Length: 323
Image (cartoon, rainbow, N blue to C red):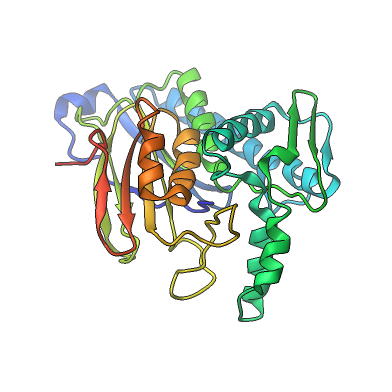
């Protein structure tokens, strides 16, 4: 699953005198869900902007308390530990119901129950090795999104050893939740970088917000620039967390094999919501070019930039490339 955003927000650009009179940019950076989070809003009233930023970060803190894999008291950790959560926070219900829908649509290519595979590879990495194939098979037997039973008042994990990771969807949900708060507080123009990107309105100069998409093989370079207006962007790549230096084994697992897919180096998805972009970037990475493109053709308003391991790149017709 994608654990770190591969997109970087670029500068707001030059302001005209007229736009400067209409408002200012306000920016705040903190930390949530394992990565730095930067919220930028453009508003004519400082008090409104600052209150909106404060409320959005409070919402991000709530999402982390619910969905963090690293806080023993989070609802997600309690669910993994006890196999039962009662009652769950509505945020967790929303995310798991959405995840189940994507899992069904992708025939299990997206699966939040790959946590046993992650734990297996992480422990092997600590020993400077990769897990034995027999161990991979055993871990894979514990992976099945249908083992997660979700209701408004109860979430249950069935089957021995079932465990969930939300690293491929929680950051997207967090960006959506923060954007909802900004809108509710009266913000009409802003950019959220919570590992995944969410753009509202436009920059002070009237142009779309621009973000850089990390090149999967050149740490200091972008593979492309994208323009966003009322749209979201997420990237999953083999370079983000890896278990072998050749990047053949990494954190994006094919739930059906227990191994990492080898066709793609990164997948960037532009979609109406950050949660959809986040989940679909993982799903398409697992599905590969042919099946991934077929999936996207079924989803209006959703586009992709795919970078193959051989260096070639492909985009759908509507992907918002700058230039």
